[in-house]
Figure 1 (cartoon, one colour):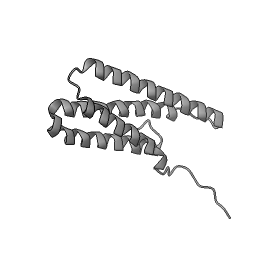
Figure 2: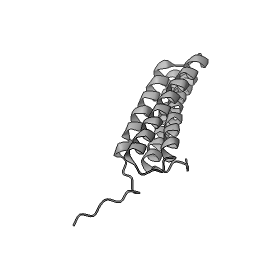
Figure 3: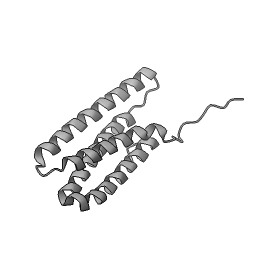
Length: 130
């Protein structure tokens, strides 16, 4: 993920990967192979959508508020479209999907992406108040 310049997004994507692996390990004994694959695919859908978001945001080099807002909205739209397309692909082509495992892991990893607001970004310098 070297193309992602944002430390919060890199950190969150790492946590999404960790949670996906943990869910695979937890759900494999419960629902077997297809449950584990479903959990993996649920996490991958969210991680790929987050990578699409991060790629668009990382390309922004402007300094205006309107430009930053347009970029953020464009990135969010691409993320949502990627999620919808990937969810459709998995549910259409993987006939043995365990829906609870797939949707559960997907939902958890999507919620984790929202936690990026709470990850400190060391690249910003706080203004000095005297």
